[in-house]
Amino acid sequence: MTQTEQAEVAVQDTPLIPIEKIVSLCKRRGFVYPNSEIYGGVSGIYDFGPLGVELRNNIRRFWWWSMVQTNDNVVGIEGSIITHPRVWEASGHVENFVDVLVDCKKCKRRFRLDHLPPENVQQNKCPECGGELTEPRRFNLMMETYIGVVEGDKMKTYLRGEACQNIYLDYDNVLKSSRMQIPFGICQIGKAFRNEVTPGNFLFRQREFEQWDLQFFVHPSEMTKWFEHWKEFRFEWYKSLVNHKDRLRLRPHASDELAHYAKQAFDVEYRTILGWQEWEGIHWRQDWDLSRHSQYSGQDLSYTDPETKERYIPWIVETSGGVDRTFLNLLLDAYEEEPDPSGKEPRTVLRLHPWLAPIKVAVLPLQKNKPELVEAAKGLYKQLQRSMVAQYDDISNIGRRYRRQDEIGTPFCVTIDFQTLDDQTVTIRERDGMTQIRLPLAEVKRYLLERVTWNY
Ligand code: GAP
Image 1 (spheres, helix red, strand yellow):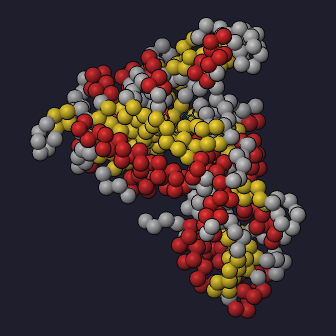
Image 2: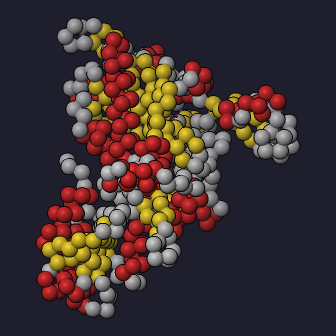
Image 3: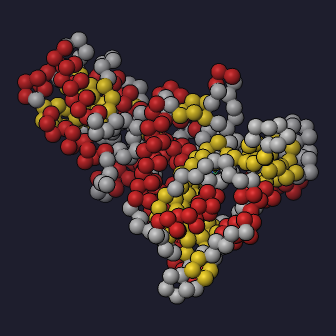
């Protein structure tokens, strides 16, 4: 077995991580906090702390780069959260965006009917206490809001239930203003809101979350080709991000699972302690969206081919994933507690891809009471800070400082020691293998940049 194969086996064999470990790390180290915590919190809503916002921005930026900036036939937009209420009638959300619920008459717990084990549905029995369940009821997930200042004259609308609707609304403007021709795509990253009946499992199912979408507009005769292309592209994209490639799969939807707009769908799924769960949906939306918006708005959204003059409503391939679910899955994928051969506490390490790691490098003077070391370390820190997210740390002994950086996923630590003062070299320690090399100070920036940033 080669070294690479051995490393892969080691990664595959690590146990699935309980969500609680990630929740605890996130709070302790400043990735994620419960929203409005001092008031007791709001279920399914979270805030991101100093490290969380860096990680989140890196995740978003990587998606944007690989979907918009490096695909010639894709452009980006950023739409608003609030739209005209008719949008949600046309999209089918007012009518169809519902969960079917049952309540237990005995323990009063509430369940989504589609989440209950089949035997409980058949026997109409609560999975928790065995009590009798109520008749199923339909519950709409759209969050309502009101626009206007005059009481009684306010217009009821909705916080968007899926971010992609802006793309259909702006499709015609993009076509006219950007010289795009079919086939082409529009991307967006943005917040979505759902009154989830059972929010939970930390960032997995929230009421306010962020989605990334590609809507790719095609001639109907090319739908199969592009659907296959984007399915493959997105699956490979996720594969490039995770350590545990065996925990990733593509699963086709059964006909009774399809959303109201989809004729066919695949989920990119990732296996965690929660089992196999959706990470991103790839949907064959056909002409549903543009036809419905044409019908409801009275605006013709058909496309005329500039060469053949054929007029048609474009069909749509959608790839729609969650920024927050990516955040959570990447932490679950990266988190590891490694036994320490010297018998001390296990090392907690976040094996995040260096491109995504919130802090790229920590600069550490060996001792903080030696002004010459501090001065050299601060000089390097200030220099690196201009090109990458860096952290200066001189609190506690060097071993503890390495551990702290491992736990937040910092791929490199640079230590300034007494030898630095003599020969202008530093130690660079790498997170995963804890290997150390010595490099001249003048080469540190280039060395790190090659490893922590992708090529633009
Ligand atoms: N426009 C299609 C659409 O919204 P979806 O499968 O409902 O499809 C797409 O959502 C992605 O958004 C999911 O794969 C998931 O990553 C994320 N997502 C959906 N609901 C979520 C929630 N309540 N909390 C966090 N992420 C969610």
